[in-house]
Length: 303
Image (cartoon, rainbow, N blue to C red; front, side, top):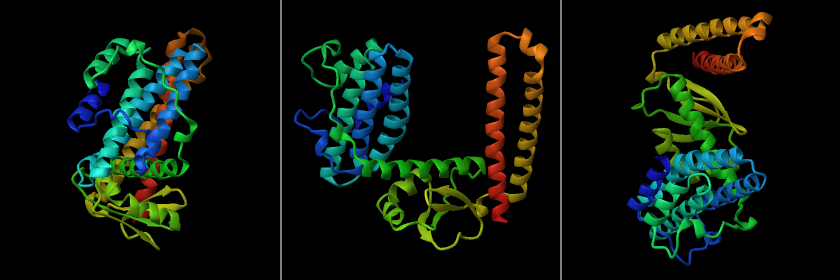
């Protein structure tokens, strides 16, 4: 469904294959970045299939298609596709269509029927997908500068979204973000990606600052500290009470599961899948408790 929706998105935004398009000619940062991600994924999948590690091949494809292409590239491409820069739109459309074509080729051994159907629907082609040539992409598609900038942007947006979720900031709220202690390179990245930060982070503004504004929650982003001004959007007392309750609940679950796993009789008698399920539950509870405690510390820092 995710792949089908991505193909539909490309169709609706006129992202069609351009016969003479060369991905190496891409100039926009987001297109240079996704070009390199395609190369990395192609190498991972090819190597996994050659080694008969089919689970690794499927895992690499899943992560790239779902997380990289759909969750990030298409989202980052939307402002360009909705903008007025004809050259930028043409390059991004051609790039999106090219990436989708490579995806169908790489995914075909794993999902032959769906990819064959999309192959026929997304362009006029001379033959079936099963007869297409396996992708062989040059290492020159990698672009360290584009990788660094987009990865920084993805990390920043992810941190903002997680903080908003952890602190129960309403979706309609538009806080401001300050980057404290940002190096010159980070300041330039912020300036270049400002519109994307505002849109994807649901922010009213983003700027660099010498000190964190009052009522802001901190997080680390590279050498800088992000400060998201959320105090006016949340009930501080209610949020403290909620976090304390959830931390106590997680601590109780950790104690209960730890005792069970420390019980030699349980380990000797329980099926392996039950033991593994409890270990996974313990790890998940420990991770959740750590994130809740981090949110609690942020709240304390805002006081």
